[in-house]
Image 1 (tube, rainbow, N blue to C red):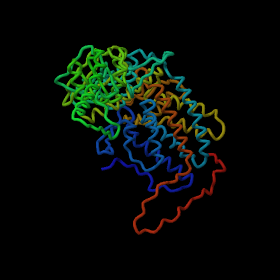
Image 2 (tube, rainbow, N blue to C red):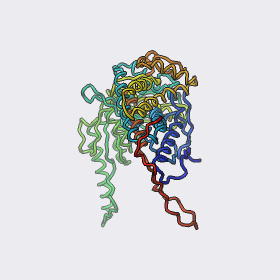
Image 3 (cartoon, helix red, strand yellow):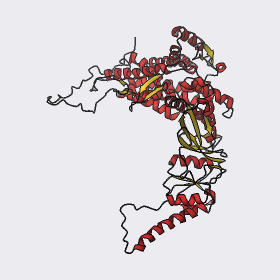
Image 4 (spheres, rainbow, N blue to C red):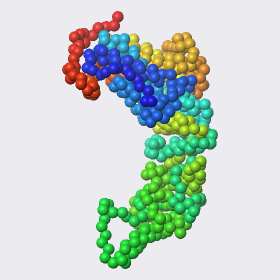
Length: 555
C-alpha cells in the first residue's frame, strides 16, 4: 500500500488565470480540511502509512502533511508552510494551514471581480494591523519563573496526545532547555535544541520513568568489556577525532621486502607507532578515551593495561555533546594534547544494560551545556509520538526563553485581532475595504474550528464570543478546548507564545498572497506515451478574453 494520495486534478495543463486561481484555492482548502480535525485538545488522531510501509499515529499537523502524496503544486506549497512553521518555532503547524486555507477561501468570493494585487495589498495591511494588535495584548513574563513556564508549555502541548500525562513532558522540556541555554549578552539566552539535546527512545518501562540526564547517554559499550572498567567516578575524559591504529595507505601501497627480517621490522614499526600514540595519551592519566574513528587491538591492550576504558567509532554529533557536557576539547592529533583538553566536569561514567543493548552514561556533570532526554514507553509508536510532542514542547520553551511574551490561547487572540480589524475596516477607503474585511473574518476560523472539534453548538458559541469581543474588550475571553465553554484564558491558564502566533499569522497571510497571484500552471512533466499511440497534438493555449482591465466592485 502507498501513502495516502490527495488527487486534486487529473492533469496540469496551461489554463486561464481565473480557472487557475480557482483550482489553487480548492487545492489549499483540501489540504486545510485534512488537518482541520486535529486542532485543539479534543482533536482526532490520524493513522498514516509512511513511504516505508510503517504506521504513524499522530495529530501533529506537520507530521501528517509530511506523509501526504499530493498531485497539485499549490497543495505542495501549502505543506511547505507547515514545515517552515515547525522549523522556525516548532508549534502552530496546524493553525497556520487552517488560517492560510481560510484566507484563500474568503478571497474566492471576489477573486474574479477584484485584481489579486489589490487583494494582496489589503491582506498585507491586515497583517501589519494584526501584529500591532498582538503587540498590544502580549503580556511580558519572567522566563526564570518555572511555574509560569510550566503552565505555558502545558497549555501548548495540551492539544497533543501527551497532554493526558500532565506535567511530565512539560517538566522534561523545561529541564532540557534550561540546561543547554547559553547567555549571548544583553540579557538574552540562546538554546540549540538540534545539536545539544539528544532524545534517546528506549522501548520498555513506563512513560513516568523518562528523565533528563545531567550529561550524555550513548548507545555504545567499552571496547574490551572484560578488561576495561564499566564504572568510573569523576573520570578524566579525552575526546579524539583521529584513529588509534596504524595509518592505512590512501590507495594501493607497495612495500618491497628483500629479507625475511624486513617483514618483522615493518610490523615492529607499526607497533611502535601505536605504542607512541597511546603513551602520548596516557601521560595525561585519563580514565576514559573516546574516539570517533577506529581503535586497534594493540591500542586497546595498551590502554586496558593502564586501567583506561575506551569507546570507539562514536558519531561526531555525540562527541560534540560529550565535549559540551564534561568540558573536554575534541583533539585531532594525540601529540597536540594539552591538560586543558581533558574533560573533568563529569561526575560518573557508567555502562548499563537496558533491554538487550548496552548504553554508556556520562552523567552528574557540573554545569553541562548538553543533555540527553531518556524516554521510556510501552511501544515504538507511543515513543515516536511522545518524541514529536517533546520536540514541540522544547521549541515552545526555547521561544519563551528567547522572547518572554505571552498571548491568550483558545482562539482569544484571533477573535481580538478579528474584532480590531473589523473596527478599522470602516476607515479604509476604496476597493481594498472588501478583502481587508474578509481577512478579518478569516481569523475567526481558528476559534470556529476549536468549537467544532469540542462538539458544541458552533453558531451559538461563535455569536457569544463575537459579542464579548465586539468593542475590542475582553481580549482574554476564548474557548476552553476541553469543555467547549467560554472562559477567561488567564484564569484557565491557556496561553500561547507570542513568537508562535506572530510567525503563524505572517506565514499564513504571506503564503495566501503568493498563491493568489498565481495565474498560470505550466506542467514541465511529459506524460508517458502508450506504445503504438500517435504523437500528441500541441497543447491548446486558452487566452483570457475578458482581461482584468476593469475592476468591478462587488455587489
